[in-house]
Length: 145
View 1 (cartoon, one colour):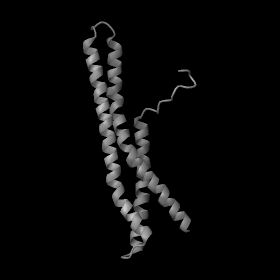
View 2 (cartoon, one colour):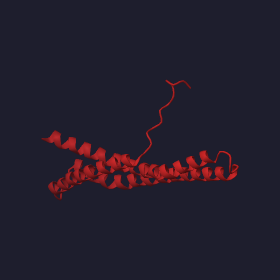
View 3 (cartoon, one colour):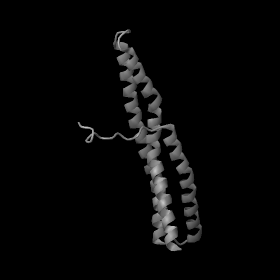
View 4 (cartoon, one colour):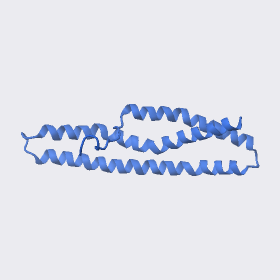
């Protein structure tokens, strides 16, 4: 593979990227809750078709997003477990004086970065849904003005 055709790997999840996602969630979630609670209060007992669709979507999206998060976290955790097992097994099989540093470094990299990958995979579906809702509901509010 030449340098120009090489695929770029996605950036590694870091504590900063998880913190940024949590910060964005901290802004998006109150916006969505405020919009929806206001909409419920203004709708009263008789809901329009648009309100019914929004409220049904509101109830359905949560279990879907959390299920996607748990499945993604489980998949990443299983992959991490395999990487850690292979690293540990590799360090046990090699001769104690030959090539130990590489196995230990690789094992420690997986041990340190792995949990952050699991967290990042779990945050992604929830983060994307909340931010998309905030964007969508914010645009709906601007159109009505």
